View 1 (cartoon, rainbow, N blue to C red):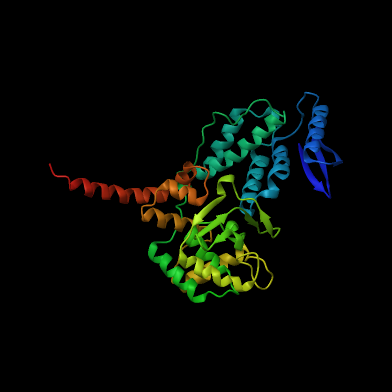
View 2: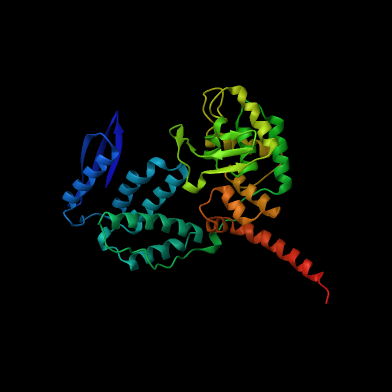
Length: 361
């Protein structure tokens, strides 16, 4: 594997490889451009591999190295936890040489895991493992994708319904937030923004005043906030970059935060940084309690679900909702919010039946 970093005005390439099961590395710096560093890395990898794939490398070891090299630095906290959980699973149940794993071995892993996990969780785990396996094929550790043609199982009793608020609860939450809002506590404004836009908390925390157009009532989502390193990072996917139409009421509230005189819309006056994920959740639970709203397991991301529920309730097209959420395609939206969609589809079916009853022969 190879990765690159810029040191001063020069680029450095570092290549990691295995020699009889022992991880080694070689690096070289001083390249004027990243392209030059990449050319060096390709040539060096070809020399090291000499047309042969490495031996004695376990699949869990490869997964961990792949995750740390290609994924970890640009992932959110919760996503990193998911990768770590998969790593633990592989170390416990598939700790074999990567070139010795068969499709049969992998199917047994999925079958066992599916007994105690929801189908959606099984799909997510399979997706991460498949991505790693594709990388291993590219790196010539293996030649066959053992995740192909595998049947995904799952325990449907473990499925969780999407948590969301009713329209009445949303109204009460907005009222409670507005009663407590002050520029010194931007968490309340973040809650309102989540309700009105369905944005992820990292996208909200990263908003700058340049991203908000008060003339055309739009919010431009083009980055996210890294809560660990307190800096900007890329959005979750390319499709997450989007422009959202918002209402005057939200913009009027956000305008109050300009008094904090910071590039970040939701910067705390105390340190110039947005509230943490934990801090925003504490504020949400506090304001929910004051509004008399009790929901087990409800957290900040649940506001995104509530936004979807509200749009579905009012008949907004699924395609428009998918684009608003920043999903790459409608399949992601329909799978993630299947419970909500089924619920409102039943409501629509009743409306259709009533309309058809009006047609008299």
